[in-house]
Image 1 (cartoon, rainbow, N blue to C red):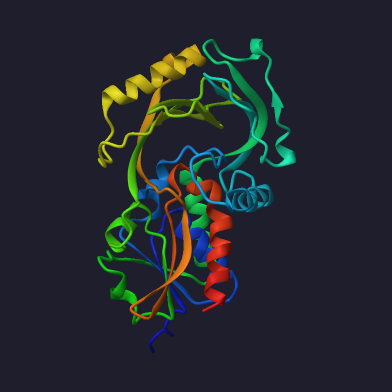
Image 2: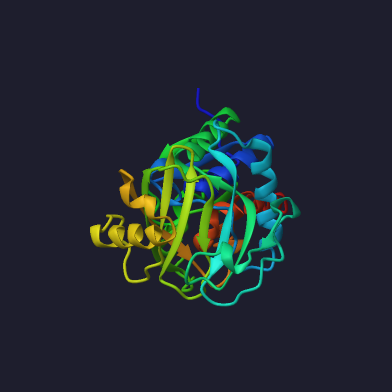
Length: 318
């Protein structure tokens, strides 16, 4: 007996694809995710990941980010990898405090004595920090439990899946550049981070100095500490570079010297799909409905639930 045709085929099993799949499946739709990589192999697995929508552009970003914040508030805990952590965001130049963070974040300005040397402005707040391997496993399990199907297979053209479902959702991340030939705005931004044994750091630190290729962040995740990071536009390699990793550790050690003694657990490298404006919209491709959900840059995790909700709305309009 053959299975019924899915209502929706989603391309990509990173955080955007899985989250979109969950919302659609839990709403009663038959959903198949087609992916060339398992969730743990995607760029999403290499995210930090701190709730932060500073690295993407779209008028709806505050709303989308708030939707994710609310979801993470509801599911936080060891099972999901989501925890709320207090820490500091800071800039090496004068910068205003965020005005669109949730009130629950309790944002307040930092006096000069609270900032690391070399930083001129900053704020203290409490934000979600996500252990991405745990979180992606949680999302995959929730998607399957909701009736969704995960299928391994590479898609070279959107048209390949038009006969498999009523709607296709493009959550291909950087892969969207190959699938959507008419979109010349997608830019690859390579990011690298280092995961070490946590030497006892309980607060996050995140740099918000505009225009830097190499920024600093330290994100505690229980017994692990994530150190970052980079925003390299010169390549797409997913292999880590020893020199880059050493520079990351050195920069983070200027904030917290104890990381120099921490044992390295792993390196993570991903390629962010940056775009002048996040693309969440419906398009007819040869008369077939395609809903795009890509171009989130370094804020894909933060925007994931809000963008998925918008995708569901667009599908209901078809």
